[in-house]
Amino acid sequence: MPFVVTEACIQCKYTDCVAVCPMDCFFEGPNFLVIHPDECIDCSICVAECPVNAIVNAAEISPDQVEFIEINARLSQHPDWKRIRSTKEPLQDHEHWGQQKAKRHLLEQ
Image (cartoon, rainbow, N blue to C red; front, side, top):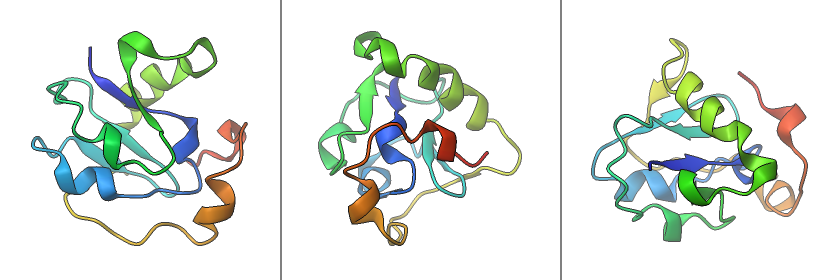
């Protein structure tokens, strides 16, 4: 099963994970990253790089985050979401948002 970026990434958008991905399968939107499920080789290298633990194996995703499997698949193919291959600065106020829960309503698509 591929890995999935979950709700914890919203409004943070740390990109440490992007730098270690051997497949360049991350895509970037305004305030969130996603993983293209057909390109992910399930290596799990990105998991340890995320400071907010936003990346999980789709087979082990918690019930309250299951919708992010579909969100990653859909947004990784969205024409406005571009492949990201190098790190960038996280979003403003990322430290505050990294500690927040229930941010799904803030996802900009």
